[in-house]
Figure 1 (tube, one colour):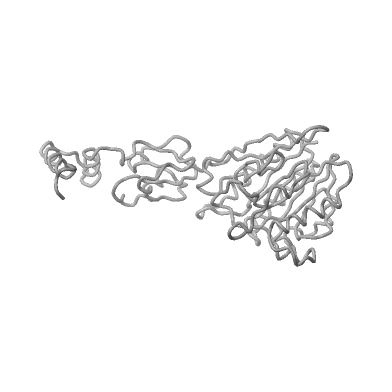
Figure 2: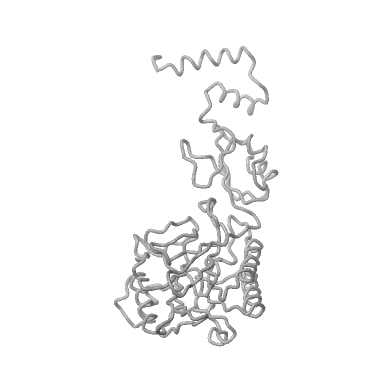
Length: 378
């Protein structure tokens, strides 16, 4: 059987005051298209459906529309679990009634969770387990860490697993050693929120949520699908995708990334103000984080740059001697690599609106030669 694995939709999220709901609706349309094109037998969403516990009504409406199109329109079952951003009780409302319709939601943590059997495989839905809630749900005061809580969930799932069927786990956790982004909330302090990949020993596939970069987590068959959109500047280089998972009678699960095409990309640009004002490659409608490498301040930079790039999310001076961050595009030469005379020419051009004359140029060379001579006393 084959199914589509995705996660971390964060419906209702804003980024630097930009409303991302139209962008989220755009990628959810693509999820529906992927289900149609691949013939997937289920849609698995591994937590953080919403961006906050009390989502805006528009986000609830968007999820309602998506579920109607998939469950009722396509006849494809949907499996959802609560993540650390979700309210388990709100997400799990009427879940018992909805199972018969093909919508399987694991909201609040429970010790008696039954697997969902689809296409000859058993899906075990393991919602985000805070250790405090896990102690209450399982009646076990020894559960102190996220590792303890998830191990208890997996152990109970194994006890209820139907013999002879592939074991598929859907979980929301931070597996030790995985790559993080700036937009993810930490699950604990000093590593207390991390779990060892060995907790999933014996699983045929683990559909993970929480981290926004698509990646394997520790070993093949344990995978983060990642978020469908870039939710921070640190994700500029990510290729966002859903994961198509195909189970075979023999051998490991086969996975294939199905990239999303965003309504607007999110990019990082570094360059001089003057070069940025000339326009950069790519769409000017993209969400942009800009870094200026000009030596001096630029008057009203944000307002002037917004005339060229209407969806700037942030602007700041580039840290001196900072290397390019992953995914940052450098536009034009870095002034810090220019010789002093060219830097002074640029300064006069920007501040006085004219070019240096020959007398000024000669004077600058004389002064600079003395100032930059290592033998010259300070």
